[in-house]
Length: 143
Image 1 (tube, rainbow, N blue to C red):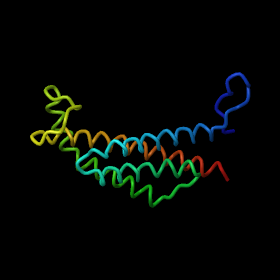
Image 2 (cartoon, helix red, strand yellow):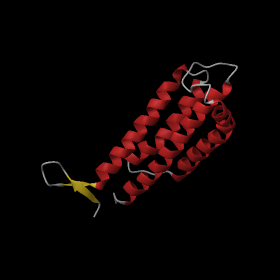
Image 3 (cartoon, rainbow, N blue to C red):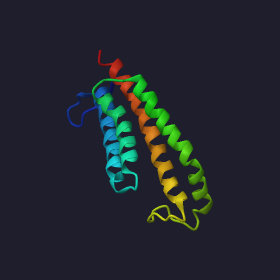
Image 4 (cartoon, rainbow, N blue to C red):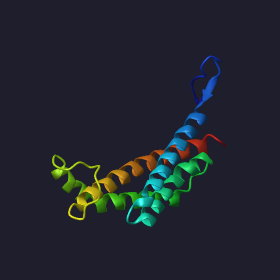
C-alpha cells in the first residue's frame, strides 16, 4: 500500500511518501519564488509576507506537520485577496484585447496590476489547498 510505480531500472517500488514530499517541495519553491519576485513591487512587505505565509503550508507538509489554524488563516487571506482583486481582474478581462498583462505598471491602468495580483492569489490558493491535502497524507501515513 502507498506504492505508485517502480524505480527506473531497479524494479524497486517508489513509496508514495517520496512523491508527496517532492510535490510539496515543488509547491514551496514555487511560492518562495513568487515571494522573491515581489521585492521590486511598490508594496513588497505585503506580498513577500503573503507568499511566505502561503509557502509555510507545503514546508510544514515536508516536516510531516499540519497546523489547521495556520492553514485556515492562509486560506482566508488568499480568498480575501481574490475578492479584493477580482474587480480589477474583471476590468482587465474587459480590456484584454487591447492590453497585454505583461507590461510595466501604469497609474492610469491599475486593473493590470490587480489582474496579476488576482492570478497570483489564485495560484496560491490552489497550491495551499493541495499542500494541505498532501500534509494530511504525509502526517497520517508517517505514524
